[in-house]
Image (cartoon, rainbow, N blue to C red; front, side):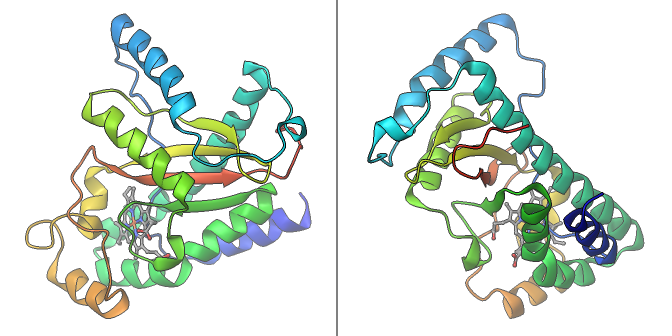
Length: 236
Ligand code: HEC
């Protein structure tokens, strides 16, 4: 185990609580054949739609085979899953122990530290963002906004948003993974009058006066993982 991994594990072990879970939930697997085909077709169309940044020099950018693209997506999913496991382990424990305000406070203090330590451990840049953010440090870029817009359109049409890989404006491989809202997220991201306990409403007002990450419903797109790889280095 290298030094970074050790630091990472210590950090993770140290956090008593998790806050936000970047559930990288994909299709769900129950799509029928027709739906699967229309998703493939839709994604093909989106491949051209999704490019809002323009790379200056196309000769810089290697043409990837579908397998090479998939290798990046697989690595990004591994990072997201790692975060998911950390967060959901902590969340489940907290729900059992009924410490919602404490969970929120830890989240406030540690969410960005967790993504930073994952970035170091995997040698990638890990970001979680949303079209309705809680922490302004998670603000999306124009490209990320565009990707989320497309994912939301897909959900609206009953399609399952899929992870997507492209080269960003700096020629770096970049993977986006949809984050879906689950039941357990509502306690901190749902309707303040119905889903969010009063103690959390109070704490949210105190910690995040400009909070926009509420009124989500189960099955909505919450945001995306946005994972950037070092330039021209293959995943694996
Ligand atoms: C205990 C409360 C709590 C729960 C439960 C929770 N979150 Fe969060 N979430 C937060 C807080 C607090 C932040 C802001 C963290 C920060 O300051 O960086 C946040 C931030 C996020 C962000 C980053 C974008 C932004 O708005 O700043 C995403 C994405 C996110 N949460 C998704 C989820 C998902 C998906 C779930 C459920 C699986 C979930 N969260 C459950 C408290 C929670």
